[in-house]
Structure formats: structure tokens, C-alpha cells
Image (cartoon, rainbow, N blue to C red; front, side, top):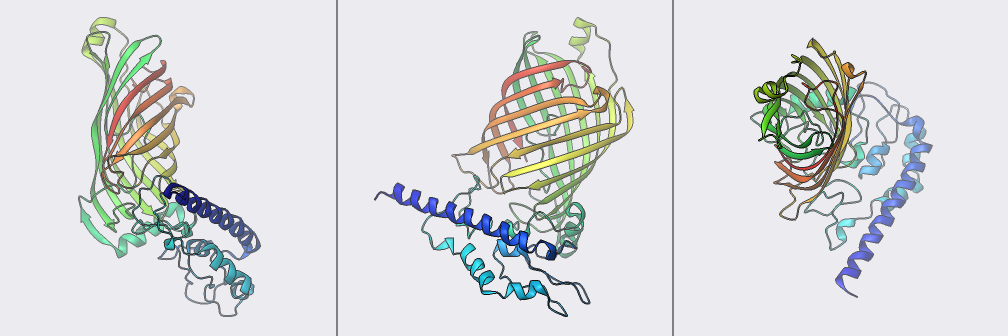
Length: 403
């Protein structure tokens, strides 16, 4: 039997075990749903804890999935969950779900995680600090209390490496380095460039290289330019953005509370040639955003923005989407990425812009710089806000670089 055949059989066995895990865990969760605690998050995502005084005992289903022994939280009186945790069937279920995958002589690469360590069950390998067992609960409201707790127990880092809340891959107004060439049916070839970056100023928390947790203050700024390739690369417009995001990270949860200013301007050459009506588009916005990592590589997010100062624009905006991108260093081979983003704006009666990007990505190291090349598609309102009310459908390709 060839090495490839052996690897295929081992991978099949791993996937079959994963399917059994999900099925059995779902049945166990259904049986014990009434006993699951939904209070404050424990200091470690997969370790149950009780507050001072008597509390209702429960089976930590999240911990059971993540590899913790099936022992209940302390209870003054015991309870059905405590007795259930000691049942031979529950003990057997734990052993079945967590047969040591580390005994296999191959490295399983899950979701293009590019990990060097084998996975045990389906727990993400250290030092990510984001184990599957923590589930989607925990950390308090939006994960902020959990992040504050980590910040209080962690260290102060000036100019930390990486970001707690990463930019949206297909977000057209994010501050980064980017260049795209696109074709528009009514307008020909356009050359859009974003010249900017986003960096961390200070972090209170841990120094996890892949998924840092705690509280971090960032600084962002960019000039977002559009050049007309068919008119000697004349500058058509430029949107300028600057902001200060405060970000919170706990487990799978990432929250952003930010301020940003954006103003949009037409280029001199375009004004002289086309003589359009100039709009003094500007807004100062307070943003609340939340993202959840469904896996190390897959993130979903939503964002709400309210402008306390507007000129031409209206106060409200909404943004949501998903990102799929390698979480760890990829090496020279790289890995695929996908980003989808929708931006809705009140001045457009809550219609807006849909953007999608897909291609190949390289990451220097966990939470390091991310280089992407690929195709992109934009449909809806122009991402250059000076052209309010103009719809565009852009097909093209680009290159993007994020910190």
C-alpha cells in the first residue's frame, strides 16, 4: 500500500471519528440542555468554575467537546447533572470522542490552518488559545468582560505584533495597501488604490502569536484613490479615512468600538474635464462591530455605524460578511482565501454595495502580514463616495496587503 493510500485511510478514519463526535455531542447536548450554565465566562474557556456560594451544577458540554474530563461544576447538593457525569456511558462517550489522534504519524491540516502540530480530536493546537470546547458562549456580552479579565491579568505591550480585530477582507473602505484594476461596462478600465495601514498602539492582554486576546487600541489611516486608466490615469476621486479602533478579544469573539472620519473629494483633472456637481461628502462615525470565528480560518462579522456629524451623507450604516483565510504562516505554497462583504447606507435607502474577493494568500507567520492576489467583484453603489447615487458593476483583479 502506498503512502498516499495510507494517508487517505487515516484521513477517512479521522473524518469518521469527527462525524461520530458531532452526532454524539449533539445528542448529549440535547439531553442536558436544561443544565447548561450561561453565566459569566470562566477564566479558561474550557474549565468550569462556580461563583461564591451555592450554584446549580451542570455538565460542561463545551468542555466535554474540547477534551476536558466530564466532571460537573461544584455543587452544594449535587444534582442530576453531577450524577449523569459519573455514568459509565458518559465516561465511555468522553473516551470515544477523544481517542488520541496524536498517535497517528501524520499532521492533519484543518481549514488551511497550516499547523505544524497534530490535532487532538478537533481541538485547535496551542498556542492559539482558542479551543473548540469553549463554544460560542462565554466571555459575557460580546466577549468584552472576558477580554477585560484577560487584560487585567495580562501584560502591557506597546506597539504589539498583530491585531486583535483584523480588517475585513472584502471591505472596500478598510485601511490597507491595495491596488485593483477593474472593468466597468459604462466606464471602461479603472485603477483603484488604497494607500494606508492599520497598526496596534498598545495592548493589555496576552501575546498569543495567532489569536491575541485582551484589549488593544489601534490607529488606522488611508487614502483611497481612483484613477481613470483610459484618460491618462487622471485622478477621479479620493476618499480619506482616519480612525481609532478599540478592540476586544476573548476566545472566538472579537469586538470593535471605533471612531473614524471619512471625507470624499473629486480630482482636479476630473473637475476640469467633466465639470460635475461637487458634493462635500463627509462623516464622523462611531462604530460597533462583532466577529465570531467559526474555525481558525473562517470568521463571520457584523457592524453598525452611526455618524454624529454628516455632510451629504446620512447617519446610519450597516456592514456584514464573512472571511476565509489562512490563520497561520503558509510558507511559499500559500492557501486560498475568500471574502464577501455587504455595506448598506442610509443615504441610499439602505441599499449599498456588495463586494467579493477570492484567490490565493500568503501569511508570514501567525497573525502576521497577509498578502493576497486574486479576482474581485463589486456590484451596487460606487465605493467612491463622491459619486453618490451612481451604480457600478466592476470585474477585475487585485493585490492586497494587511498587517
